[in-house]
Length: 601
Image: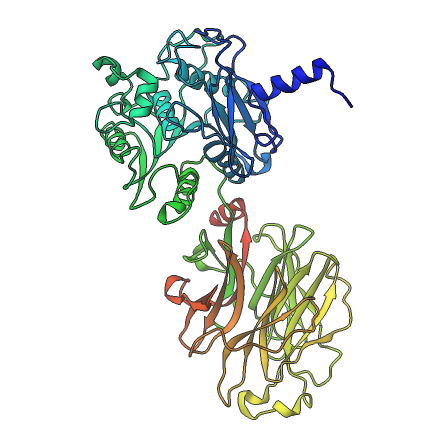
């Protein structure tokens, strides 16, 4: 079908404005920055040009005459209203708008931060009456525009930051030190001051020997007057009112010397402005979100800075449920922000006193969050009972009436019901409860006089509501005395961590079995994943994408851990710390709000 003349004009206009299909495959809204651009000179010869990488994806933009903001709004449920305006680098001659713009915006969205990619005008006498202030005009208006629309976009107008890379870092630091400069007539006179700045390998100074010459020439000219050099050497413009700042630079940066960041850091420090700087041994210039070497971790450091300064919602943390002594006083809780350092809650006193079962104990407490939003807990209530304890809670503080679940009452020769755990099956919407029991006369091939004749296997039942339960069945028979099963779902199916309870020849270690289905069948048990010490009560969680298994080194009266790596399981017991006296517990991931509420108890 032949296109009409108007259709062709529309496509040409679309591409001329830089709105190429590769650039906006993210389907984000791009809005004009100005109704009327201040100090504008019309130039038919000045036409925006986009640059594509070898894969045909937009990488850069040149000759910008119509500045825009591309809006990346975060999930409101994961955001506290913080927003960041991103200024891509490019020596004030182009904008690396994908690597230092759109990709960064997506990263910020993942942190719950709203992002706005600024496609600012680049200094040019062809389109600006004063090219020195053209980029600053755009940056000031970007802040004001975002603040004007704070309610519309669910933003906090007091948490609007600026972020810049390379020459974009110069623009961001210029805004941070020249936000009060009257460079155009604002229609609302709103504040153009950013609440914070993030500067990545930034150009800061215009001083010879430190500056990036290309940026300097493009912005203020090759033979700029000394007062103009001083004005845009932003380390000289810092005051006590300059926004708090996060800085990143590589020591071997040959394009923009590291002294740019160092001098800005020292100026902020001298003015007692909060500042954090990360200098890397290598990385050169233009590494974006980090590609190799230690500089690839700067986003993690930045995320921690954002959290510490309340620019993101506090991340989820971890709660550890455990018992002390013989379990007489009940449920104890500890918390951790990183999964390594654990601290007690409620001064290490009990959150729930046991009331059910033959011995009224609360050993091996296992807690999970179910599909109904409740926390469900099961525990060992006695050394010789035929059932387990159960209770539920909305907040880990207030618990339902305790119940006794007689899961082995049908077996007349059952000697015990130990270390129950729960795993929730999202597909069937059912809970599987499983535990270790010895049934006299069963599995005689592994019967022993050791361990008082106990010879356990893992049994299970399922329920949808903790009121009606399916018939108890055998879950795992590994060919040895087995207790303390704990099952997690991973990308391949299900992994069961378990204790080989064999005493002769001595095992007393943790192993793994796997299955594609929660109910099994499970594979043959693996070789031990723990060392030459006695371990029990495994509980596992993922930290930074890696599985960590915690366990009770019960003969040593302390807790240990192993981490899964590409080379196998690494013992990291020396890296974790638990409250003294911690016994066989489980770890769960919880919201920061839950932890804050627990801290108040």
